[in-house]
Image (tube, rainbow, N blue to C red):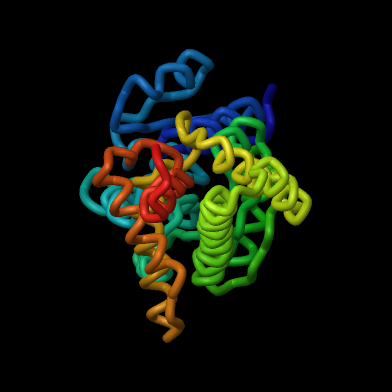
Length: 298
């Protein structure tokens, strides 16, 4: 199925990126891919994508290049250098950053792209890998409004909702901080209440019903069950990733002179979780640290 004449590049085929990229490919766009672990490009190449040997090569073949990477440093590594995106992206072309990054990093990326005559857009996504596979992510988009409009056909292929936040490049990463911080606080709150209820002899299934009745967001309903049942394998978002992100929240809050009080509590539990070998479990496994601190038996 052919979609449009837009050529799309995708860099970063991890749990989230692979799902998004698959939906872009299914939508019929001409696709180039790059990943440091070459085996992850294989299914896309077998389905007709071109495998670039560097971010530069993918960018040179693309009208729109998307990056789904681990953190600020991995994004900057993909953008800069003789084999980076900026070395390959042609004037007027677009780079959409999907990664949760610091607001200051987004400002730096926009400046670097403008200096090269290309466009950087913030486009962090909200959702877990299953939502990425199903094309049901939501995205916060900010930056040049005309460029966002020109990308809409591509972005719709991997999302169920595009939330446009205006021309300020900082709006996208700032809103992602808000959304992720909210989810993090609800996970911490449920863990504390489950521990309290268990020590009080309450029926945890009934408490789970209370949580699921209170939330309209499906992801939070899912976490209510995951924490209740202590099912932390098959992580959609790993505890190590949560530790990385909580530092992003702390820095963003501090820059705005807002105290990130809950982040400090959760960060300590994330660190303790990593120390206890839970780094590859779902980030809601902080509940195990809450239980440990409450004196509850494993």
